[in-house]
Length: 318
Image (cartoon, rainbow, N blue to C red; front, top):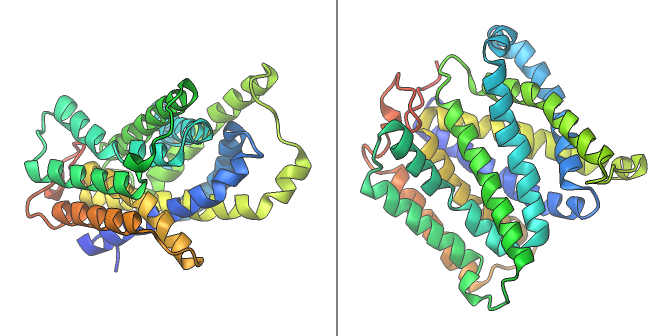
């Protein structure tokens, strides 16, 4: 099964969400020791080296495309890789994971709103209903209504940072749908290559200014196995799978699958022997229903019209 088919694209998006679920499980304790900005730089330095090799071997004149779209790729990569990763992990340090998971689940609505505002494509009612149902499921999984803790300024700042980070990924996804001459591999790799120097420059500047602490070499060596896994699977493989799914199904559908990330975390916990709670099972069912309502709705996405490059209408890869 390949991502050229609709079932293959759905499978690719599901793989990406599971891989990103493992990122939260492994990455959260790492960022307790390693500043999120340095974590992002190390993660994408390793991932970009792998992506550059892959695109050199399998791309179609990738470096000419990079020169042609250098500024666009730099901005998209900084938004989708740098801004998203740095702000989301900083936000999780300040707020509760339950808040972060629900904020992440607002991305389908942000994508649909941008599609309407910028492309003039009003989302169908079924797509809005599916996104709302999935959002309710994520809130149930997070047991948001059951948390009666005080929301303080520290939590609000963390939630604001997470929300800003999600906008970076939404814009990155939107940009992918406007480059029909780029394969998923080329888009993933070239945006990473273009953004990495700026990410390194910003990290170095923040470190020299005393805003963040540089990691000790011994710490990086200690974390090397986890960082290698994060670079290869939740970063490279998941990004390739996600961009391939978006290319086939469109950005609104791709972002809707991000609701599966907190559900995949629960599934991974269950696989490790931690039984899910009743609210987690109910929430996962709601997320599944929301996805089903949209995925199997006939004529839901304009993405099925080949040749269109609008946000929700990414062409099928050739």
